[in-house]
Image 1 (cartoon, rainbow, N blue to C red):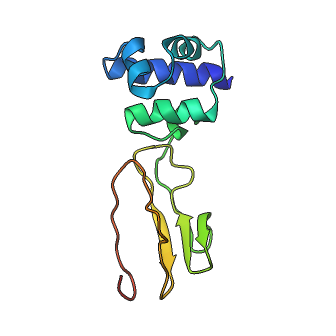
Image 2 (image 1 turned 135 degrees about the vertical axis):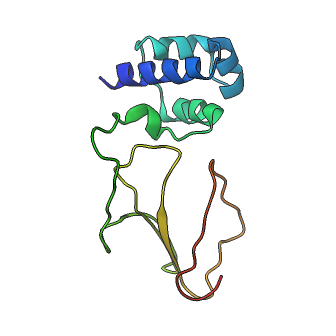
Length: 139
């Protein structure tokens, strides 16, 4: 059951980080009562609450909802078979090359950026680091 899985993973990562429920509540802006109910598998949290909790640990909410991968962690994505995650005015597309990999701290994307493409007025904020390798052209 999903709420049991989320609860077990939440408690495990909280304890691994030597945090009390109250400390997590303060850092995530989620009530200690809600965190306790989630950990005990008594409620299924909303996506908004899961994002707040995941951000407190600097990770993706995927960690909480995906089963631990069994077997090999090798992901081979053939050309043209990546999972599209973003398109912007047909000038910028982002394809995930690591769908199926259950490590919230590691994702790989293949970006195609056409000439004269703009990232727009706003910036993009996310946890983690970025690495860019230009295969053709310049940026």
